[in-house]
Image (cartoon, rainbow, N blue to C red; front, side):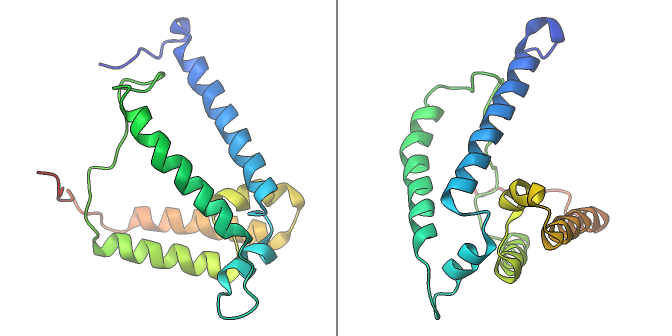
Length: 157
């Protein structure tokens, strides 16, 4: 069992509010850090040329926060607005993970966006951003048409 999501419980509304606030904080963070500026992102990825190290500090900060807060959060036993944590069951590196990471990296390196910053930058009206997002949605739709493995082995003991 989890926490009931009936409209009378108020939990469903709280989940939506928490999601909205998390998204706003994330979006503001993307803008303030420069992650919505494709030139800054491509400058960060250009380690052999005129490398812009600013985003290294953004990533290091995110990793530090995650490294210290995740164990504290997991000690709670369950999230405040859900019956349990949704943690990955697969711990190994497989072909699908490697191919997905390569495709993600190619998209990031070719245009300078990953999905979050592209969504945040969409209101800027750049046609390239709209094409990027439409291509991303098309890719997600196409992958649903490919045969999926029925089960993935878990490397947990």
